[in-house]
Length: 333
Image (cartoon, rainbow, N blue to C red; front, side, top):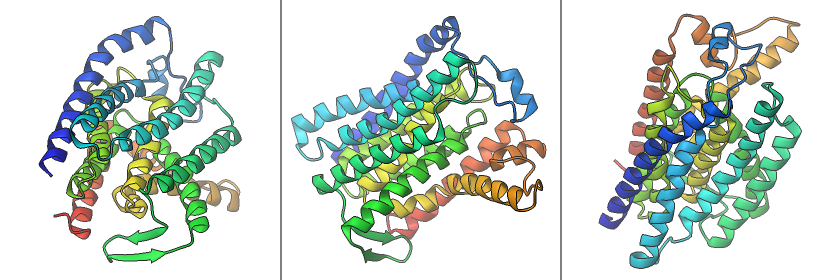
């Protein structure tokens, strides 16, 4: 386990430093290129003052993760030989979602509107990518068609075809849930940081060094990004970053064969997307009435007077608490 700890800590530090350094150059570059965020017209009116803030900031933590995983793979190839391809597969899968997000961001910037790719375009790309990833994990022997239920220590065997269908649909839903959580300075970073720290701890405990490197690198990169993204944000992560993170949390959860864990440690993601579904359904059924002041639910609290910093502290704190409870629930602590 010592090797896993050292490599995870190294990945964390390398990713953090890379994100911090890259941000010093990337943010001024995006300003010079006038790659600013277009603000939703139906969003909170006070967010209009953020129009023009550089976007695609997800490249900060993406760069940190990529550099860390390259270094990590080199170390594994030289000293361990085990799990060499795991960080590569996890990074490539996450990058696939990042590319979808980049295309979405680029369309928004190029056309100066908040709507990028169509819903159908994004969904088809996500489903295709998810299908390829789950099949690859199965081929690598990292995935079994058994569903582990946390806290009850029960494993339910299912057919591989059923598992494949459910996993692909779950990835698409989870990625979009993570995407909905983005919308307030620092919020998605503050929520995803404890999730990645949780996965790093689990990976180390299970001696899965490849997953440990990836999760620790993600945590380090997110801290580096939050230096620039915390309120008031100097840069937004954009869909480039939020879809990458959605892919990343799904990737490491599946690599550890713990997909249902996301329902617990990712409770904020679940609440965010559920608030949107509830709002839309209730609005249509009641012909115009609303449950929340605005959805996703973080905007509801914003309109109730919560500051962006308070939102980050509360939502991030709830996530951290659920991560600690889950570590006890699955016997890690």
